[in-house]
Image (cartoon, rainbow, N blue to C red; front, side):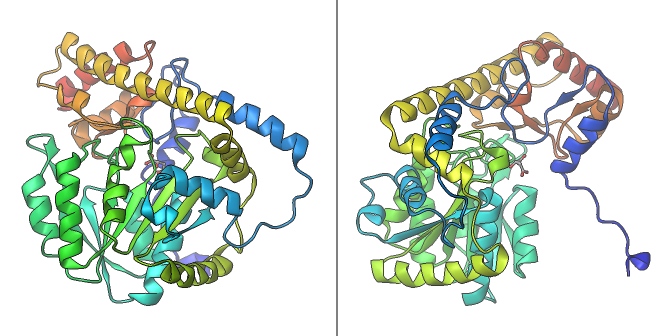
Length: 400
Ligand code: LMR
């Protein structure tokens, strides 16, 4: 069967990590995949996670299946974090949450769920967006279109066109929005921008599907959920795909969640029944470990505080690297004003580097940047940022 079939192209993000691993250059730098690195270039297990794992090992008694939707304690802990404890969607039980295998798994479950009930809907993604959004919603069978988001001239938000586009999307279509730390641009809406987007969702009747993979990497866990709170206050249907890969560093434990928020509690019960059928035919029920660890941390005051401190350190280090990159590029004489990098938020920066520069950096210097010029700031360290800036200066001179 495979004789006549062409190989698929490597994944635009995870494929880079494979190339990076195979690159023998001792000075190689991976600025590709969105994985946090500390200043020593490692991705250590968080102290809060280590402590929770110890507790869990001592008290767990079974490896039997979890319910289809995951551990109920996990769903509650996720809702408190993602929606906020005083959120009416939480207190009035208007939301249901399932443990999905990572943020990707949450998007996939949500996509399959929506396909069942709105098969003819178009899915709208930001221009640009995380490459996998196209894959996930496309494979679920949806047609995909994009709405304006990023302005390459100003290196900022294209707010007027964004609002104009969202104002034309018809009822029933699905609009994927990055709640904070937009991937790949690092350019976010401010609160007034979100208020306008929420009004358009109410006015138009399209269904917001929030991708919330970076809670805590913008300004803080509470600040970063502003959009979720506003959509909830509007009392409309929406979905949230969230993830503990980045903010708990639980990458390989596949610990994410899909939260479906409904106008009424009885509708949430109906929604959950259908979400469960989607999960059952996809992977039956989720893995347990990461969810139990996250729940232990979120429900224990001391562990929670330790986690929040560790998360703050990650956030601060990334902001430091933004400043170091801007200064380093100026010091190396790279033409242009890169100060916009300091305004962006989260792990990523749309650096403005051309595809030729990106290719040159990979081929000549073993510096891995995602096509389109997305840089993972967390891949920079005080030890490599100068080297990276010098290489960018050389690349720009050679092919920029
Ligand atoms: C990224 O965008 O690099 C991360 O979300 C990892 C992934 O799965 O692509």
